[in-house]
Length: 293
Image: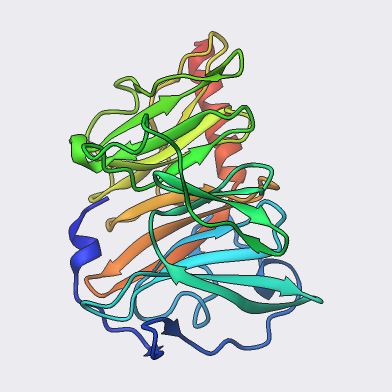
């Protein structure tokens, strides 16, 4: 991720509460997916005018149960970066939580843990516990973790902007958490390499990076796990997903149907986009065909 995106001056259609929280009004949203019509095979804005507005809305992610949606906003220079959570209650989506961001939100595949960079919260009833540390292997001052994602096996994949933008992986073997290791050059190449998403079954990994031959700025790439357990080559996700601008921070819904990600449209406007996740299977098939040749 380009650090300047976190520092830029923003002009959003929000008001600020006395506690510094971002406030906005929501229309009545009924049904799955915040009542939005599912996207096609070309990426489009998610919930335009509701979630994706004329400012900075990023890091959109549905909970694995698909009954909660979280996204990140900031109202302007010097204001806190804030995570807002919407929850579907009796068929209608309503804001139920808001908190200052302390790491980019992702979920364990069972939905019981909210990962936030070096920390996490566990579900407690209808809410969340206090933020806890992942421990000394991750809570290092010399590591700049922005996003950590977990597979169903407990594998962690995370970025590190303090170490020249690399991605690391930590597996669980015989019930023991293994020390994080750098991923190979198929992932750690190019610049601004960040924001990984590992599939729950570990069959693929998506991340963003600025590489030679891309569409201009950071693009989304995917690597498929090979039969021998290694990671395949980085595959640019193509013009249906990527643009000439900054495309980053992908997440795939738990039902495997949709991929959400960030797209920068201008210096003051970054939105959440989504696309039919069939694009993943299309790229998987193309990769398999190349491997057979």
